[in-house]
Amino acid sequence: MNLIKTSVEIEIMRAGGLILQQVMKELIPFVSVGVSTEKIDQKAEQLIRKHNALPSFNTVKDYHWATCLPINDQIVHTRPSSRVLNEGDVLTIDIGCLYDGYHTDYATSFIVGQAKTPKDQGFLQQGKETLEMAIKSLKNGRYLGEVSKTIMDNLNKYGLAVVKELTGHGIGKQLHEDPFIPGWCDRPVEETMIVRPGLVIAIEIIYARGSGKMKYEADNWSIATADHSLSACFEHTVVAQENSALILT
Image 1: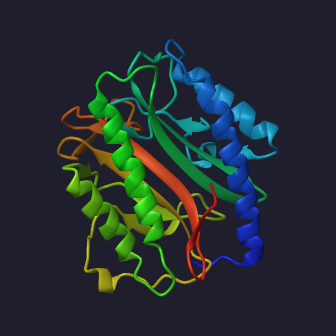
Image 2: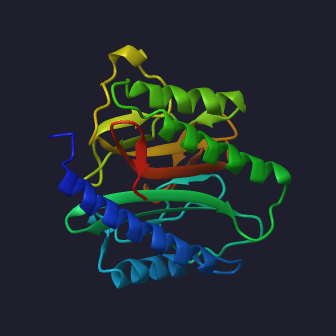
């Protein structure tokens, strides 16, 4: 598989990313206390299709929804359901769209209504900051492992744990492509690939307050923290350029 996208492919993905940005902008105000996650998912699919795109996630085998909607200690891949949101819940909206044959992927976490504690807002801010730093570390001619090291170092600075089994990934004609980008250094940075212009990846900050150990819930889709600690995810699809990284979502 060719990891480097052409300028034409990048422009298509940029258009798809703009659609995903708009969908998220319209979707977040729909989220409120008392709304079920299945209603949020239905709204998300409606918005994606309104913009002449298709949901990416229901292209995954046996997954029939447009979003993954983890709450509190749920980390990723949580299916929409009749569960309703409560005041102070931390909700992650993870969403992808397929536009003109190419996928883009985007996730953000936020508090529904009023925070239960100021620490929860700080926890989310630290994840956002880590994503911003990770994107800045994606540089032409540098090692891709520097992205992983940036994520690990910044989360560790705050005493937060990386969920090691879950990673960022390449993206394009497939939702999940090579290379995979862990949030920790699973090998020396110098043994990772060199970043070149046209590399498109989804950088994911998947982290928790506790140990970072995970478990599958009963449906075998949703993954939660083993110790029930708070978790969140922040993700952007980005492309490496000559002098910087461009956020597509």
